[in-house]
Amino acid sequence: MPVTETVNEWTFTGDVQSWINEIIIANPSLPLSHAKIEVRGKGSLKRRDLTLYDRIETQPESAFRHYAPEARIEPYGEQGKLKLIFAEPAKPIGPIPFADAPQGSMQGPRYTSFDKLMKAKKLTDLF
Image (cartoon, rainbow, N blue to C red; front, side):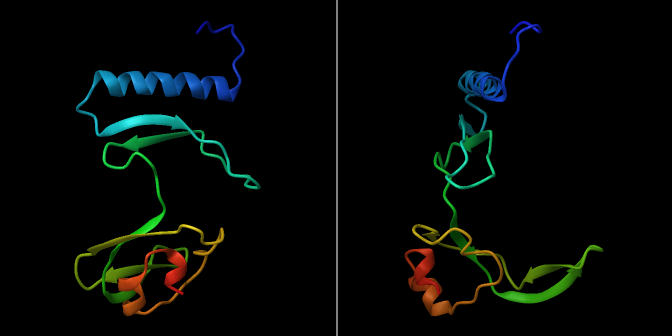
């Protein structure tokens, strides 16, 4: 693309997407399947310009996939943050997709029982 050409962000992102997809096709050892331009959701001010997908999952999905028992919670950094320390390695479950849960459902703490976690088929089954 000549330097003198004026390019908007969508055109530029489309060009980058094409270059990345060409690189992925030419290098099958890369752990990526493809690049895709993402548009913002209706009513959202946030937008992801470009998303890279791995070979295992070609569609991103917000979901619970692991659980682990808590050992303790410790202070982390200087901003008043906390770090959760697990008692043992995480175990796979689900996935339990967010599915039809309202946007913002996981903003802030949420509590459920272990029994509900093991039986849940979607996020709203947990609460």
